Length: 139
Image 1 (tube, helix red, strand yellow):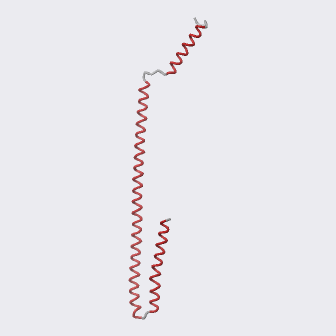
Image 2 (image 1 turned 90 degrees about the horizontal axis):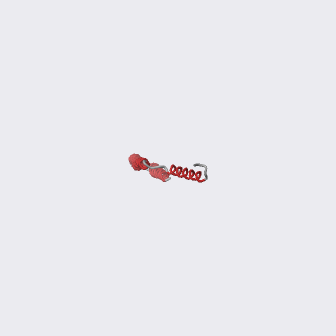
Image 3 (image 1 turned 180 degrees about the vertical axis):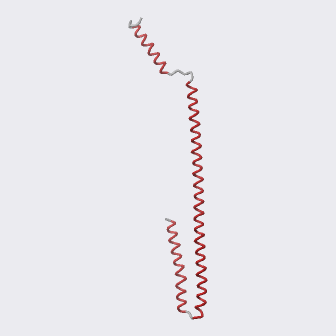
């Protein structure tokens, strides 16, 4: 919204400048004598050419400034994106390393261990055998 207001303001200033140049010149040329008309036309021409040149220079300066500010902003955004990608890559690498270490620890810790379910099944079979023996079903 600010850029639109700035453009409208520049357009208004340009129109007021042109009107302030043309209206007095036209009134002066209509009322002046022949000797003064030639000099006033030359002076008006110089002023008009100077104002056109200055307007063109100002336009290019503003365009260059806007483009350079845009480039600076884009550079900053690119650096921020690059940093965030580096952080993600770093966290991904650390996550992969942690997972590999966990798998290695799980493999090492499982060696030599007996599954508790197997022990539970053996205990239940022993109890079943003792129960059947006490009932006289097994010798």
